[in-house]
Image (cartoon, rainbow, N blue to C red; front, side, top):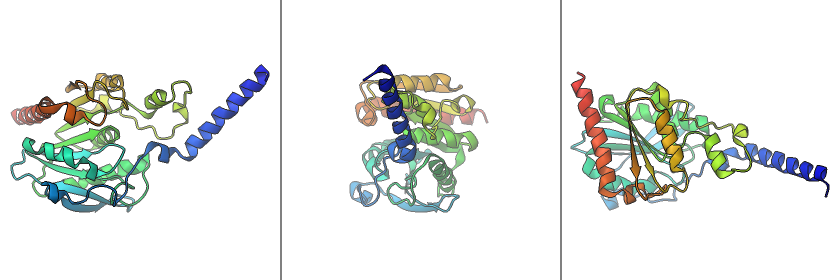
Length: 279
């Protein structure tokens, strides 16, 4: 095979792969688990979750769980990560109980009991609808509302914070944008330019004025620790970074242990206190 033939074959391969990526982009990016996959009896494990149904602005019916705490000092609006659905976060929800938080966690379109198919603009619509819905729930106030985004959910949390007030923003294991992630997955083939879903947190965090906590596992095998640091460094003040020593992508709250939950509690408590001091 001549050099010209080899080069032509390489170009054909790249163009074919780009076409495949464009055609199946959403299925490559998003990995939902639909109902009935998962665990749908939270009360049996001591989580008093209320089923909440609400509708996105384009008419897609969505589902979430509201877990009220009678001693709540704040509310966590939870934007979960890419794989699975909200029911796969039950263990994590249980372990948050000592922090005395109301929790509203919801599924994006195509996940769990939510209708539709996920795409970038769709999950942003779902996030806006969840923000609106959580403020309608008993015991929830925007003055004590914290947006908590993990991994892909952090992209949604940042997008929501751009145009909706909240007391604080918590970003855990969050990447910068799709272009940076594509370089991690395909280091030899630069495909960032071909991805329509930008999933850009890096360009937005400098504009966010609310208090921000960034957490990232030092051994994250999905979203490299360096990307979490890059996102933090680009963010405007006030901000705090908490490395979760030895944690990967999906075991942060387990590997982090008591210190992890103490970091969350400290951020929430101090943010509420500082807000009160400002009048």
